[in-house]
Image (cartoon, rainbow, N blue to C red; front, side, top):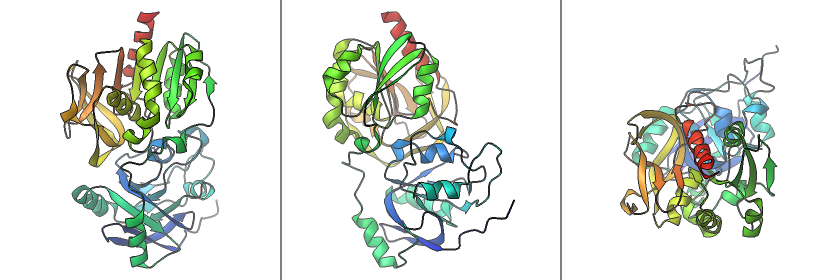
Length: 369
């Protein structure tokens, strides 16, 4: 194999609080920005970069070495890369993986994703943890510190931002399983492995775009309703998603929500959501199941959470909590047959401790049938 010459183009990362760091450019040469967040996973960079819940965010990987196993189409969670840019400590220009079809550099170039390498990510993560999540800009074309910081300050804040319509599909699609159950799945940024998990359990899915007329949803005559993960502020998504959520509740059929779907189901019952100081992003978050007492190691990706102070025991009970900070990770609703979790039981690659949640949804539909 001919040695790959690393890109030596300089790049800068500027945070809205005035912090500026230097590095070298990776991926597409250009300028990009968004909310700076970090992920603590050791593997799965391709799955992370294609997770629609990260749309509009700059992804900083805490694991120092990124790109060493290249990329392959089957690892994509969506049709394209969703992150706005990437930050890493050490970027591998070459890869060693017989299943891969191209390097991460080629993958990022093809998707026009701008990144920066050679950054002290450990120091930056500590900075974000202390100061809170903030906007930032990566550039390999603009080197003026003041201009970059100004750009970061002017970038749209995630709070109040509606982004699900940016990542949803353009038309409804039927994904066939064994057809034991008909599930209406709402695509606010649904990950491929969620679809796979439901298919493998005998479900045929009708995956609906984020904004779908109610008559079209009714015509599917579903046995159950699934509300997916997705990016942005849940209160902004709720402005149009509540019609579908409320119809599903009125139908009396089982309901299951993950991440944004969990937040939408909570909002429909009068609970509130709040922007987190840093957020949870990684494949190592400990979650306690309050029913069994067991601890699950979970994969998470969210910057908003259901506000514990708004909890009403008449409408929902907490089923799971995060052991790091005590935040709500799961709810069981009392006025309709539904449950939801803040974390990702479908994560690939990731822990499988929470896969039983899909079985729980299937069991609920079995009981109704």
